[in-house]
Length: 154
Image (cartoon, rainbow, N blue to C red):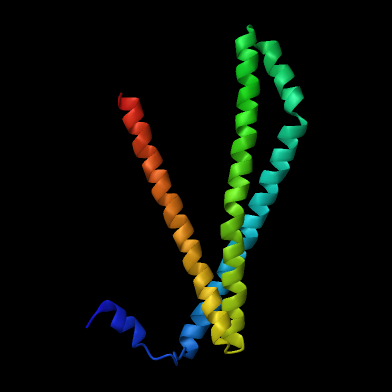
């Protein structure tokens, strides 16, 4: 039997028993908690980003007083700009999985409580996308480390 035939021959009337529903409900509570933690983390990141952007001139000025050459002053300004860019990237990257966790939590809970197959499918699909996102992020992290080792070895 082919792999595709196995998936297409699954009974469309999937039954979720009480223990599975309870497990999924508990999972939705934990994913909602994680999504809220991500939101708090993103809030702190935005707060830090605003603080750095507001205090950028102050930080540059204090670094330039301690710097002896104009090159080190330029490097300190570039360093602050790099930190700002990195924080913006982190915030932008983390918004997507946070939204996916909220979607999983809300749709799955709604699907279980109201026996709505469409909501349950949307919730599971959001969680699948969440896992795919972090899988790709993990692969990119591993590749980044490998590239760093190769560059440092040269």
